[in-house]
Image 1: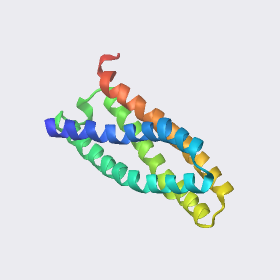
Image 2 (image 1 turned 30 degrees about the horizontal axis):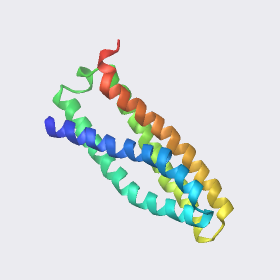
Image 3 (image 1 turned 180 degrees about the vertical axis):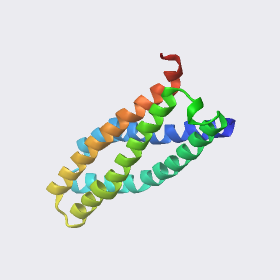
Image 4 (image 1 turned 90 degrees about the vertical axis):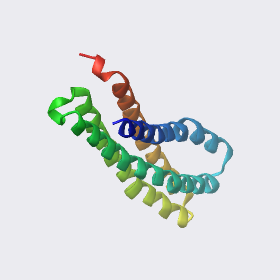
Length: 151
């Protein structure tokens, strides 16, 4: 159970921490220092690298989380906070796949055709989606760290 818990927490830290860094640190600096062609190209490279880690994190989160649930006696034996974390996690995964499969694909098309205005619009949509996923991720962290103490 120790290894599962460790992998679970590390995976969450990589995903949620990566979104926090990208949204709160990298995004404003890139917007301040880079013109559209460089900024949009940078984001494509960032997404390409980060998404590999997110996909690994998602697999490890579900394997480790489900393993811990079943080791604790199954879904009927765990508290409401575990069910809520799973629901939010499924929402986050769906949003991640939407960003990756639809929004970043549109950004890639805009960048390849050098349509910087359209690329900026795509990036703005991605930013809003990441903000939602980051908020959901922070809620999951809060629930994971204190949810069992709430009534």
